[in-house]
Image (cartoon, rainbow over the protein chains, first blue to last red):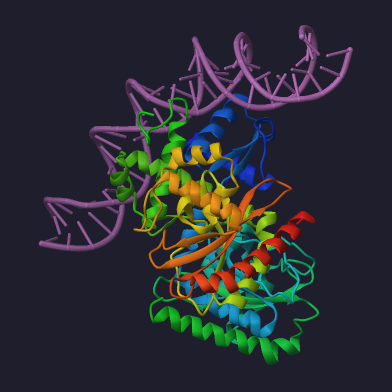
Length: 258
Length: 258
DNA sequence: CACCGTGTCCAACATTGTTGAAATCACTCG
DNA sequence: CGAGTGATTTCAACAATGTTGGACACGGTG
């Protein structure tokens, strides 16, 4: 609890360093040797040997003095996603749901206290949100995140909140624990969660958890779009029933072994 | 040139080791400490500290004694993909092309001498191929790969073949350099490439390169499906014109700055 | 309860990361 | 053309850190 970013005593420092470099490359979208060395406070020669090693492993590529994360990351991540029963079962249903509603649909999984976007079916009729494949979102401020939290035991929820806190990304983000716990109770009763611009301003969504028995992995699906279109009436009459219908179908598919 | 798999003299051995472990986890889909140590010939204590470090960085997760690659890989890879102009321009067009033809459509980019799958628009009317997101394919045996090779200078082609060879994955894979060079010439004339079961038996495809001027990154798109449906007549009359039409649209979108 | 097969921790040693400085390279501008 | 600048690459020496076997703890089984 002393130094959140500083390395654990008995961990491989050079490996940690290499991954810090990778993260830097991801955030900047690519950097030169000297940029990376400067930004991370490393000796150039140190940064150099790390980057060279990463290039040799194939996880970094060098274009003309610029180092970038290679598509090996996409491969390693893509394999993991594509073999998830949840993804396989959900994808075609989300495509249908997207076509029926004209809104984006999503599937996420919980990992390390985050809601991870596995797939987004984009509606040509809607506008682009900024959610990228594999993005990690806080659980307390997305529709899928809250739906998954609602399925967790209270002490697990407390653990997660303790680790990640409840940072606000918009004015509407829930930042009070008690309010959140009450909302989770509502979600359990109602069967689906609602996000009213708590993550991206003006973007609303409804979500529901998927109980995937075989492995007890926890996931959720959602429908999202601009606030003007995701009205309370439309949720109640059209979107929620459609979402819950798909939830059932997906759970059945997984249970019949997906 | 002595030991293809053995480490470069001046590279960080512990970092190389950690990535070999990551690769092992990817291939096995997850492993316990002792499995990983055995399979890679490491002392358990060594494997242990590597895995612990990887868990600490967030790139590996531990479920109940099983270590797996985490979704950080998907995030790092997803970011890179989602910001590619080629992907952004191609995705909606490929979805349309898939709907029009009823066949799978794909976009790949060349990296490190491989064709990397960035996106696949799956047709509900077709059957599943085994290509996963981010998969790396040899260039000489896929439609997109051959289309991209045809755009490369001959010495670059020679370099790639020298590095990766021309392994055969089916009876129909081209394994003779001269045959390949002739085929590349044909592709340049005709404007598109054809794959007749050279990668997966029974799976055929046609592809064409995308010249993405801004960054001179090299990519390609394709239509693929079962041999019975991708007939020479259908290619000539329907598929090739549709593919080339999309090629034009995508190139225009990229040029108008995508 | 003793016996495995595990995973975890530890301290000693040798290996290997790190570093500054020197060498090389690629450009720009006199 | 050639000096000058900024960046990358290489090197050798030292200190730091990765590796290892063995000791310890744990959970299940016979």
